[in-house]
Image (cartoon, rainbow, N blue to C red):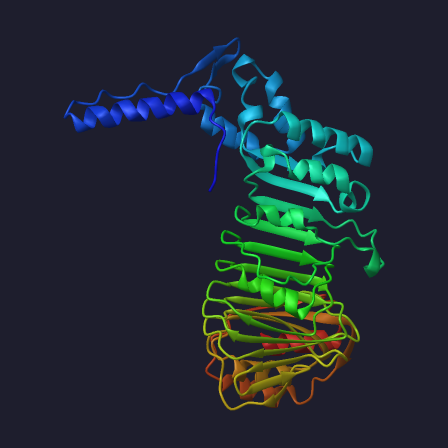
Length: 406
């Protein structure tokens, strides 16, 4: 159950709404409401200060933490707004010094009376100030926290030194709507932890096992966005989600197998980074709405993409018996620059409208028989309208390739 601190304005508004409902129930004619208040200063009318407390509180919550607190000195009208506005506590707008920053965060959490909106902390606090962190997370101010972020610092390079994501983080499991966790370890959970309101989940440089990942997914019934960036510890995961719409993936594990068994709403599947010696095998069994796909590469890795009976490995179409009509946007990273690859992909994805091509800095040309390929591409029934070339330098092979696409 969610609770919210009641401000004087909220009490007044609730009373006015009650009076209006009483008048409606007795058939009384409602009087028109007075216009928004206008505050007049030396330089003219201040219409912003005339807005209702709730609207101003929402505006303040969108500001960086430091700027939101500073609104108290604007005028007497603003003095009591920030302590009751939705809390947006982001460490990036506070002093970099870790000790000073921790002191300010403690002061803000101890003195803020508004609902908990967002809390963003550097993951170093999990290393150096676990007792302080426990105090923060047990504060009534953060009781109904909606957005939690442990931001990566890039300083924790040894996996065994990465802190466990302690149990107290799960105290917000029923209120969190967005969570970003970095440079931690997720312990294998004996029982499934339920996150009934979580819609966005990001894990960066996190150690998580196949078992823990499975339990985490089972406990997120309305998750629509999943990011796994440079994570490790898992080797074979299966995704079954009736709500998931977007997956972003990169891994530090040598070989990972991803099987998308049932994802009826999935629209985007993106491999974010390419690492030499790391390979990802992706098998899509049922994802009928996938429109954006990438990045497929012809580099030296052993990456493989399987759509039903269509198998693509290193941008080569190994097996092709059925087309994938849902994909409209495709991204590829290419070393062997040649028209044959594009033609084969157009055959696999006949409804493709946009093609993004990242040209490798170390490229090998393969522009054989451009006239034959040009005649062949004219025979294809294609929806392709946009091609974007990244890292284009205008070399002869690149110019021939661009001319072919044109």
